[in-house]
Image 1 (cartoon, rainbow, N blue to C red):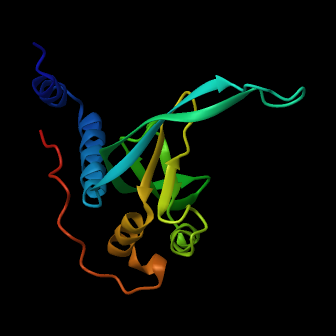
Image 2: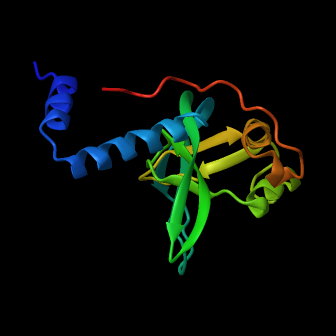
Length: 172
């Protein structure tokens, strides 16, 4: 059996000072992100496609329908990003359908959730789903409460002391 923890420790011990600095910076950044990590129950929906009984001459010939629905825990955390010199934060949903469910976390996103602009009543679809990817949604109120806890200024509130981290960061 391969011991990946030992392999990682050996790689760290044999690394140059520059490589160790990069590894340490990575672990520090991940530990910072994990302070904002929380677990939510998401609803997943699997879709299939079938031909229409009487398709129109021009237009769509198939319909998509839900075949299965289930719930599963996913993680959410806030990360820093920079693009073309602009720094911003994202909210990342870890464990969703595609693994790329990310939204820019700003006042527009937060107030849009509260006002119902980003979601159906009570549901935030982080992945709408298709025949290739399962749909994934969360209760909107859970995401609003998470933002209220982590970034209250986005909702016009005063900052509060954050709750303890979801889980301890990985150390070597």
